[in-house]
Length: 173
Image (cartoon, rainbow, N blue to C red; front, side, top):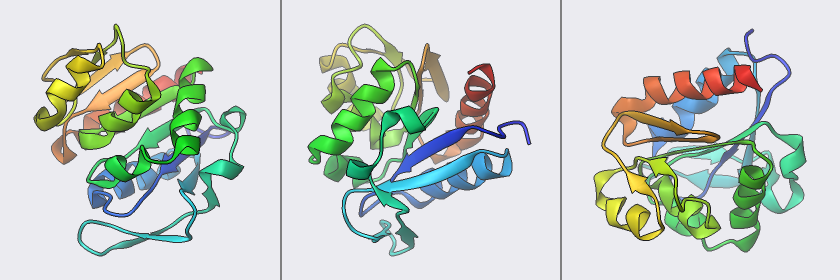
């Protein structure tokens, strides 16, 4: 159990991408991390294809001090997530605390809204490349990019590399 004692928050909102939520959720649990699902105020959220996910807590009730990392799945959920000031602030504080902030696909919208990408190298789904660049990031087309405490990936096919990188980063903390 290589991540025993590590706590990871995974964010959820309606229209999340199934693999980008469930693959990290299960992989990090398998590695021994305690994974806590944080939502925006409801108990159950529905994926792009109707698959439910249940939040353990509301992000407003969570403190970044409780966690070693936050994972932000993509889909259309990040566009909804960034509308919640408490969620955006949670991500900003995780970053400012040097904690791991991992995001995949369209989830880059949340770190953009948190204002944490200026001068950093990241990747994302190609459709939001302009958004990332306009936020001051250097965008590259790679399956996974780690720039300090930021870990980013492009799409579901990149999930194995994304999760391996998160696990390696958590083992360093």
